[in-house]
Length: 193
Image (cartoon, rainbow, N blue to C red; front, side, top):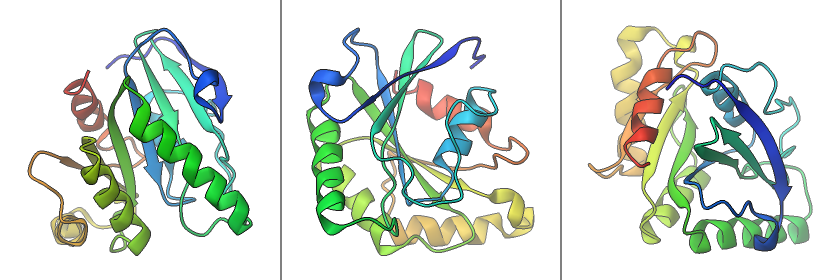
């Protein structure tokens, strides 16, 4: 997809703050620091629309990005090792669960994992949770530039087997460093719009 316009719209924590136009939405979920912001920026050809950070747990709200005035990307807080209190983590969990289970505009979730490593227990829990709620998943394995191309299949097999990816869900290799896989991710997104 050729992105000609992209804007950050709102950071929301409650449903009454969500955009009301009724456009389709694609959620982005992944461990803290797995590269969600970099994926968003690469897909929309912008350097810093989605803020990247060295500090895990920076995203603490649902961030809505309007793309070509046709759809929203919704960046959800990262799971895993963010250094926040249990109370704060529980609040994030409720906020994310409310969005993912109650939002009719949500068409699919891009779950981002690191191709270099087997998915974590948190990754498995997230995938299983999305499947339980019958939410379509596009698994994007990032940082493919860090692995020789000849070893991608071996790593993809580990991702696929660890998550037990269903045949209806797409698994795409991606690199924000060189844009590899960008068109494949857009193709997967378009199939849900």
